Structures are given as C-alpha cells and as structure tokens.
Image (spheres, one colour):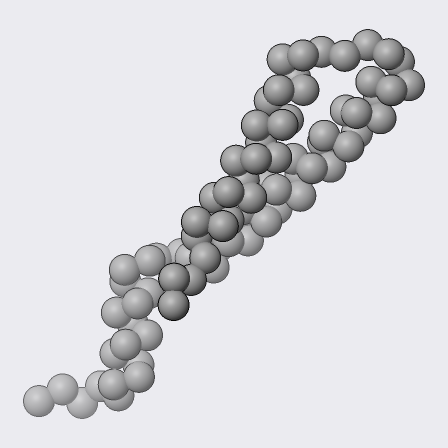
Length: 78
C-alpha cells in the first residue's frame, strides 16, 4: 500500500488545497502595514498643509480596509 507517513500525507494534502498560504499571509501583512503607514503620512501632511485630496484619501482608507480583511479571510479555519 502507501509507504507515506499519515501525518506527512495530511500535511501535503493540506498544502495542495491552499498553496503558498504562508507567502500570501506575509504579503497581506506587508500590504496592510504599508496602507496604514501611507494613511498616517497622508493625514499628517493634510493636517500640516490643510490641503486634502479626497480621492487619494479614499484609496488609502480602502486599502486599510481591504488588506486586513484579506488577511482575516486567509486565516486557518481549524
């Protein structure tokens, strides 16, 4: 029959169902950090200048919502 260890088989099956999960999680964390840092910089510039670009601010808010949401949905369902 099969000479593969059952634990290894289970791990390989799980990896085949969700490939590159670790890489995706690292990217979601990096993109989330970048979005929040960009929002912080944008807000500090708008406070000092008083000039606020609505479209850019909405893009930053959208990124600050999107990437942590993707990270949340990519978590383990166990």
